[in-house]
Length: 365
Image (spheres, rainbow, N blue to C red):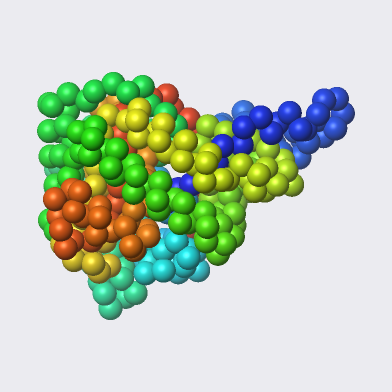
């Protein structure tokens, strides 16, 4: 979901040098093999996840802003409540906690899909009296969307160029149908001219954010450059998950400051959108936490259906994060006067390393 940033580190690994110093640096960094083994265990599939811990583990695979995982799960008899964890909020990029509630909705929908497959059909509700908790109430019954469930461990935000191929009309219909959630409109954009106009808004938004020192400071707090650090925290934006090299923790921030420029980011986003098959823009019926939860449910269903079809997705939320660009985006997608909530790109591309997640024990309570 929701506001992940990637960096073009370039050839910075060459600065590590050769010989003993390089070996020591690699030991301090940890290895990608160890990282990928650990993350694969976090995302291991279960044929029928009836246990509460398995259901919650599946829910934690949902997309979330900056991979902060700003959620807490409270399992009780007959339900699981998902509460916002405001200690992990990102107040600069997300001052209204919009992305927090979108993430809760994505987690709740993932939980509902997983529980339905196990024979516990759930009903999602929003509880404004409990800090905006999202509750999944269980009831016995048969059901489940097996294709979406099977896609959960494989869904990722793939922030790299795609292959530029076209998605068929039949698959676009499946994507739109999967994302139907009350109170949410989805606008699919495959017209290249309109995609280019949205790309202009993405670049404008990104340029504004790069020029905001507070935004950059907040972003850097969630960057993880080494496999060892990414596993230790279980959160944040790991450079390798964006297709960039893993780096020692002391070197990553230095190189980030060198390469995180308007010119480099403009080139990157221009290429990403140019190689995408289309863009998906989600808009809730109202600008409040209850509808943001619904948006999160819809965008996760879209992403899971895309994954089931062999497609990749990633978020381009700059035009909804910068308030001055929302009206322009709403006009472009034919929803004047509305607040767009999420922008996703989709297409076909290679998989990248998955982002780490915190263990279930860390998100309970």
